[in-house]
Image 1 (tube, rainbow, N blue to C red):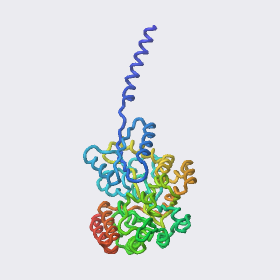
Image 2: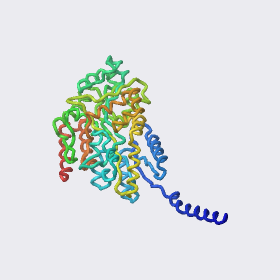
Image 3: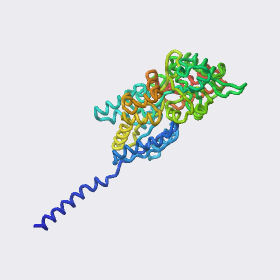
Image 4: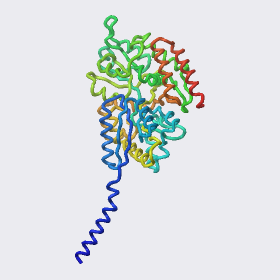
Length: 429
């Protein structure tokens, strides 16, 4: 009897092992995620930490984060992988890449992946201004993550040195000129400190989108098939930008490098800089002077384009991989992790409830500049995005630089860019 019971138990145990073996040895779903690292602080460490947290909770999903340089690099590498037959499953890419990605049939709409009311509520949990570059044709194609606006960083010590109130940064275009002149410090013809610097390489169209919006003019329509580069208010905005250097002498003439501007500010070579909120944590960590952050100055209204990257899921992935990608994106965009991300990087908390978490609430009280970008979203508009985005954007970038370097007048430069943009976009109307 003892032997029979023992034999029966052995057979049951063996059967259980056979049944459970496939589960224990099941292959994890593997996701490749391209991620742009171009601005801000040590983002790789932050992203690696968030991915590690996800994998602890989801041991059946392995995530390989591939850091791909700037946004253009990330797009090029991700699309090259798709064409090579070794596709990634998801990526953070420019929010403005949406039309190109749709046209190439490279991405899947999130509306086609969500299954529950909770999922659909998540799709609507982000700031509307940040969703403008993620939605078109009635569907959501991109989820905000590494998002920013342009803000005005200013050196409060330089304001005191110039006899200005350190708590009253320039509120409008006229004050940017008048304060900029007082903040500019010279010894003869040698400039030791400029009043203001607005970068005109890297992403000149983005900075220009702020100036045009402040002059109550958008750069394109919501369908991505029409631009307004030669509108009178657009030309007026470029005239003003040119005049800051050529006429008013508050910033260097010609072009100003995006990549070195933050260092110029930290080295007190300029009292004011316009730059991404993605630099906030790096400036906070490295500034040896008292600094402030403010919304951009007005002309006819406040305004800034949003900027930065969205999550996209690639169509060339299995249904199982797409659901795993969705699970990862939902994990990374939950309120607590969004708050953590914003604190550690300086990027905007992409959803209102992130600012209701105890962590971000406390951080904003401790460091009020962290709320500036959030508050400015009320006045934000979509970043320049159209069909043929890369070519259209380059037309505007080249026109801006031609005007700032004096090779063309703002009016002529923008008229030429508009004519070419019309030619490129005509088939999409």
